[in-house]
Image 1 (cartoon, rainbow, N blue to C red):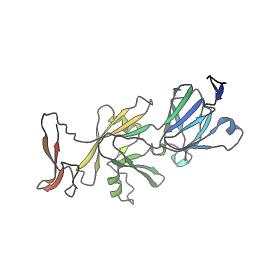
Image 2 (image 1 turned 30 degrees about the vertical axis):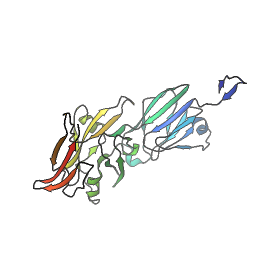
Image 3 (image 1 turned 30 degrees about the horizontal axis):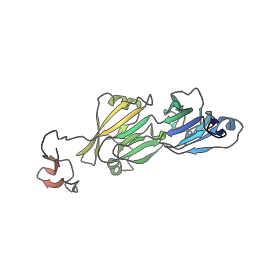
Image 4 (image 1 turned 90 degrees about the horizontal axis):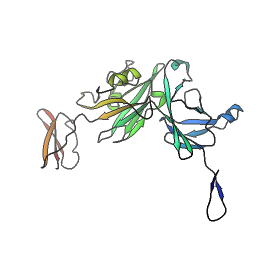
Amino acid sequence: AVMDAGTGPRQATAFAPFQLHNATGTPLSFTPLSLAAEGQPAEEELPPGETASLASAGLLVSFPGFQPLELQPPFRERYRLWFGHASRASQIVNVLAESGKRGVTTLVTLHSTIVLHNTCADEVKLRLCRRDAQAIASLPLAIAPGQRMPVPLEFQCGWLQSSAAADAADPRDKAEPRDRLELTAASLQALRGGGQGRMHWGGEGRACHLLTVDRLDTPRHGWQVCFHAPIVVHNGLLCDLEFELSEVVASSGRAGAAGESSSAGKGGAVRRARLGR
């Protein structure tokens, strides 16, 4: 307890010496190690993005589909997670831990190793996929402009592709798609440091996003996959600018924001836009 001195009698204000924040994109549950050792079922759930206040930092942490993880000081930067099913025992999944002081409270944050960042002005629709035995499990994602979203732990060993490409794929086809990003250390390292990838939208591939990959400063050992618009037009003139882009939107595309229009020309779709000074 913390003693607050005022004009009247001192009052004791309870506080939690530890806090646990879930930034893994995966729901978790935890039990104090003292209770787990006694076999007392006292699990508490912690959804993604939420924080729990704790009286003790010694915890038994569980993620769905994984064996429990023992978390206690001194905290490591990276923990190995083991799948609960033997068919995926060879796949490597890690959870990153970051600890620091927030006043007199120790905050421990658990992170996914991969974060997706949408730098575009429009929403990016993706699909996370992983192969489990003979089936392919998938998770649709919609990332708002400027939003960062962690990749859930169970999809760390899978791949990422556009929703349009995933919806067009034949579910009976067991071949893994070509237009995708493997969420493995080797694939991410290949795009790191200036390398660029492309993720196409639609079968004809006329629209795409550029992908860049880099290491995160916080947490260490983390990866960030950024989605960029393939073309960015900036008006640095002292007058308004009008321009056209061909073969960027489908011929049936709808009109965009004020000052923009779409029409079908001989060479395909044409988009006209106006930029102010």
